[in-house]
Length: 308
Image (cartoon, rainbow, N blue to C red; front, side, top):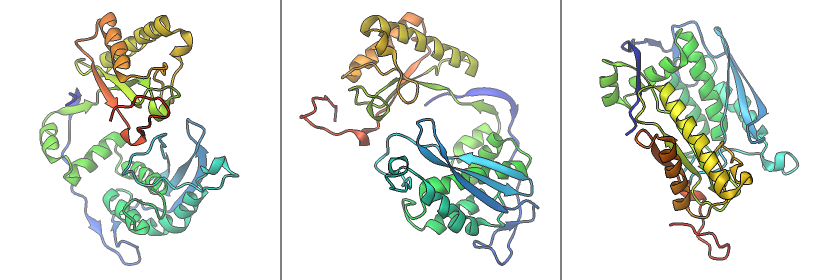
């Protein structure tokens, strides 16, 4: 359990929104609100690793709303399929032109003229258009790009900040009913920032099997204090790594964490524990792991000690 930070202002109760059903739409859902989905333009862009991903501009009467799809270096065993072109002549096969075509030819017709505030209905139409359990027909990256843009358009249509729109969607879905019953009577809350401080696995070129080791100042009283504490520990950790392994060991992995050539996760945890003690923040900070176990392979011939 990670305690969130309270902010001022109470949550308003979710307003009931009526939906009018009109013929001629794929899913039969249109709102009496004027804003509807009028066009989607998708394009290929590069992410922070220099790999292609999908960005879309979704247009309604309220304007144009842009969303880009994140892309990870590792893939979970049960993750939805990120559709790639497989053409080795372009971006080593990682192009996303197929996904872009699927947006224009399959997803746009499915959601055209729908109400962007009806997020669940729009998402269901996207799922129906794909028709597979892992979104492999049209690509999870294509579906997610459209869904993200719809969410932004829905927030604008209701004249809400995006964070509040998302919270109202979660509240209305019943997915977090117990939590919302409490929070509705309390205050808006910020999440605790977790900082990725040591990288391994698919995120780094070292021998460390665990992909991410993080720190979170769960004992801080505010977001600002948590961020300051995390940053201070990060810089102390760098000093320890440089003193023990040399300056080249302070290079960073894909997500900003240090990537010293460690073979044992226990050694990495000891480094962080030392940094916490030296910085004086041991009582405020917890350590978290993103193991990414699906990326691990137990092999004796490469000499990497992995823990099953």
